[in-house]
Image (cartoon, rainbow, N blue to C red; front, side, top):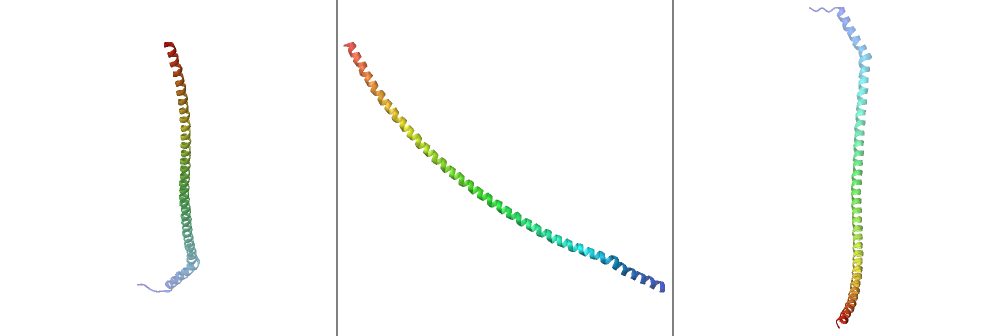
Length: 137
């Protein structure tokens, strides 16, 4: 059987002293360091989450600004296209008016030339008929 003698008590006492010394020298400093690291990790995680949220907000703001800029540029483009179409229509109508006026002037000149040619032709016909009369009579 098991006998309890003084050596057993001495071993228990030595183990107890060893545990106290190891606790003060080894376990408490390591626990303190591990606790500090966990606190730092928690702070860094919170900081990273805050930075991520900040980046997401800034990204959303940038996307909103880009979206607004795109819509504004599309509106500006549509307005410029509309203004240019109006200018083109105005220029076309002005050119059509110019062409009509030039056509009417050309038609007047042509009518005048036709009238002049008819008069000249009538005179030549009269001259020719007079010549024929003289030759036959």
